[in-house]
Image: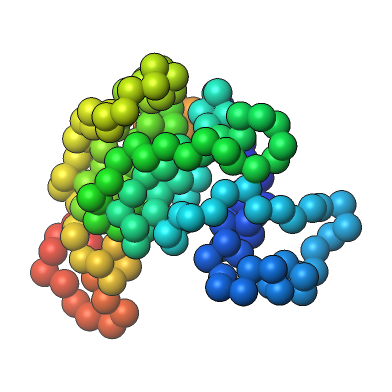
Length: 175
């Protein structure tokens, strides 16, 4: 698995959601050794990214409730492949990739799609089967987006945010 230059991708994906894209790019100041280009567009509030060994970038669409696989197949620096991997999700934010399997989060769940690149390479038109990893996470939306990440041994980590800015909760998972 390659490590993505996340600040670079974050800038690109954040800029894409700005209505006046071209004027925003014109005024953006960056180190001269970097270059800003649009890699992918049409993603609704993208957040976390993960890349497979085959170069597909998986991205969660928080307010869109979808997970996409995007890839530059012709080497021009722009994603020309955009495939829907999962939809009808609640706050699909986190994505992580481990040993060929894609993991992604909802507000109170984490899912897995096994051998995702193999599935996508087969060119099937149906959405892949997803396997529930857990549905025992708090469902409070206030700070509840779930970022996920695997360590090198395959342990999966996620965050649990506070249910509000200033409150006490009876839910023992917040203690």
